[in-house]
Length: 609
Image 1 (cartoon, helix red, strand yellow):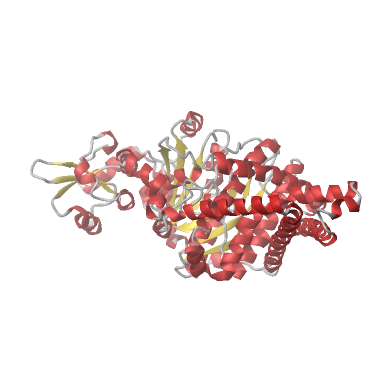
Image 2 (cartoon, rainbow, N blue to C red):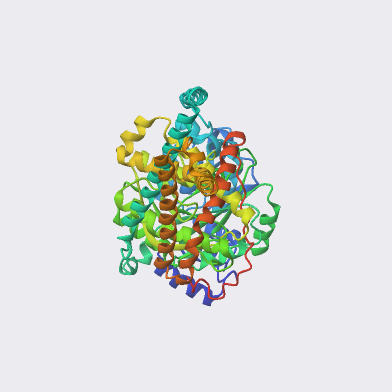
């Protein structure tokens, strides 16, 4: 390469030292730092391997040979069948050294009757993506449905659930006509008791999380003892749609990770009709370790479908999801590796905390930050400590790649695919852990944008509840009665409390405006007092939990903002009723959240948080 003028002696010396320290190949280091272009590198490698070089991406491949091997295997092993001669001899292109191990991998799949040529790893991924377009699209869209339709949100209600719902509605209607007063009394009492149970459940779990306030899943010593040379290949999936404004910052944030760039495989997942983001990526000229995959246009147009496309070609031992605006802690990948190696094989996923770098922008971003601080710093550690199913956050969840494939990847019909996947991991006997690392995101500063985002999340919780309670017996067998009760109170209770808040507020306002005699017929004293006490206790608990989150993050200036939590719940209620309506009329519609709206100047790069 030096003789050909492709790299300088100085760059070669640096790259050799970096390759030795990271335990990476020289070529991978050169590509990751954009010190050489991929085509030039692989032409040199072809000469060293004494093979002809071909650009596979420009060829029409032999379908008979190609489709005999799974695309994920071809991607991970770095070879692809190209052509078949009249005598039946197969030409195979490889991006890996043609050593004994590679020859054995190929012969196990197609036999010994083949000849080798060289190509680039990009050619292989691009060709697989093109040739297996329909196969991958079908897998990404319907893979989980075909595996087990009971676990897919493609169908909103199972036949048994529809029948049960119809029967309940008929019974309530008939009883309401015959005994309207008693029906109102019974429903009011039921709503109040369920509301109180859901709120107290969150309080108890959060208090358990408080006891882990100083607990570190992974210590600094654990990270320091991790040899860079022994670090595995790590795949980073970045699904992006109309993110042209923030995608450049995303690459900078990934480069800030304390992980060898030569061992990072960044797969940027773009939609076919998103010319804005594609043009932004082309202007950036990303390094050779970044792969751009275009997701074919097909319903449902969701983030999990895009992630399934990336999963089909992921080559890392571990895999993480980051949104385009994410700023993960520098040591997050190393902490995840330590957590996986310290855990047993049942540990399929670890979740990092999420928080916001623009918390001080306006009232909404402050309330959003308080909510996330309480959820990720207290609720998730509490769920982890109690060994309850953990609904994942939408980003910064780290997986064992092979295990993620085994359980079917993400459900593209569930609009909170992360929460669903966390429950599904528990349902197959796996576990989700929590690591003490934070990813900073952009908090929603616009109320309409917040409502759209939150209604999608709440709708997804409703979908997840319906999916996993289709067969309660299986749920009980998988996670026990404690896990099933916790799942129901958390995933079902969250939208329920938001939906129940307006009626409770209405009863409270009526109790102030009307004389007690007017209410006593419909709300006997004990029902009215329970409802009002429930409302006060529920709001007090959530105000307290919001304040706790600020203390954990040492954001003391946010503590008093927790007093606005009752108003924040009103916003949640608006989003919840929108979610319920969408669950009925368009259950799989993905409400797009706009990013890059913040005007907050974060000059210290998160030092304030």
